[in-house]
Image (tube, chains in turn purple, orange):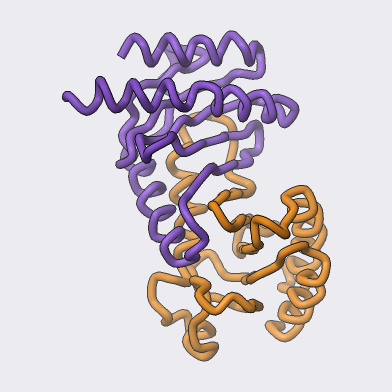
Length: 128
Length: 136
């Protein structure tokens, strides 16, 4: 998993103080790797609920018949969560940022690292 | 009351580029108002069923997604979910809680004709009007 963390650290460096957390998530909703701004704090996505979220997104996607899921933007009271679908349905990359102004950079970084993360999931995660 | 919300949704649809469907519902999943042209939409159920909230999981999907997302991110300590924008290949689905968090607004637009900035701006303005119409 260290390669995942290396990628997430690169994202953290690029985003600077706007970075809050980053997650690599399997297609089923399991968290494969995470990087929190404050590692010691027990703040994270809830694994069980996350699986439910992606199941619901799948159901909604099927009902709407508007093609595959590409990305989701969740606006929170004090931040934003950008989640993009990785190439080849390999999973999801989720970035949590503090300010709206950092969203464009977050999106750019997510797209930049998407293929690399997808390749890693297909190589490492598939063997487990 | 629902007629009033229907009228507001109709007015809102004129201002949103690429508009397909919109609905207002209670947090328990009961759909109070629906407007749409997209025949295959998730909310395209007989109106009497929708009003009674008995059209199965379809009506509860948006609010379930908002609630589940809220629970999934609760431990992040970054506050509550205000809204959620899903980008699909051919469309945008926007979901938001209305003031007081007793009701939600859902808007589905076409990807090609739609504009996310316009969607956020218009939905924000009309969310206030819908909240007032619902007596919040």
